[in-house]
Image 1: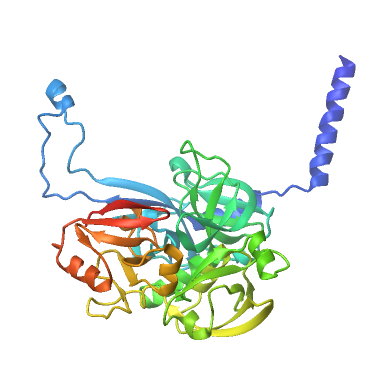
Image 2: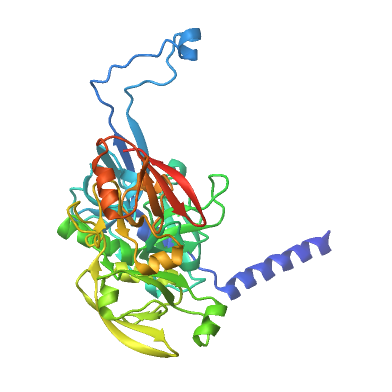
Length: 452
């Protein structure tokens, strides 16, 4: 027995010494400092008082028990987290936390409650800015995601599963992640445990600086699986500043289609290693075209920032305001050349009225824009007729599975040869009539129905 106790004591001493040797971080002081600036958010979607819809007599619960399955005029409530960045009550959170809310209640750690005003929201970045009426409120210091390193310790505070002001910790797993079709947010990936309710809360480094907004998880079960994603604070602050000053968010547009450079393409081009964004399309009249960018160029640097992969380029372009002059380095014919471009505005030059000619891109309030097929498009796709989807501006269209680059061949029963045909077909539809499109996506054709 003595030997057993002696061995156990030795193990405990060894474990303690090992922990000290590893110098594991202590999050207690960090949690105490940051906690008061993190808020709980309740978003209420108030029911229409005039909606007096009663129980459905055909409902099974009503027929057997006289109880409606779901009251029709019931408030909807959702929740999440946020954090204060200014002493007068400016708060950052995720857009999806407050989307569609009629009333937003913010609760501080000291139990004070405020009704918040929605200053602005941006769907592309999933960032929203709120304002509460307060003075000398606790705030979080804003850092920079650019300064973070892979493997760095970070901490999250939020309201997972409605457990307010819960603290979790982990490390940065990766930076610059793209999720789905979202091109303009280089997400931070971490293994910090995040669950439903953490959305909108801060990701904090060991200096006590907020470096991201905790936004989403990848999961097969709906619970935490070790992969969490956060919007970089640099992106969020840029969005917040624009929403406060202008009410809208503007993003720069270069006007190129891009691919990754694989090893085979790098060998073909004479590059030392695969890197950069390979240009596979240059839009007519775009910033890129005016700058002299050509199909086959590899963009390796944008305004001094290295472009390592295709995914690296869109976020850095989108972070620059339209009409800004930027410097680019492109690899062409075995050497790197310098170019200067003046950026267009994302969404402005990709939308035009129905009075434009066939060389323009067209939007008519349908949630996406189309453009005429160029000779390059025809050669690349093998299609001589139709129009190409240039941009998608509505989430419902995205959910219908229409993709940028798809070729629309028919609207309803009307064949589409060119932009004029498309304009006429859209104009002939009733305002609320669904769009039934025959499109070429990838190697085959498919029908897509978009409800309006």
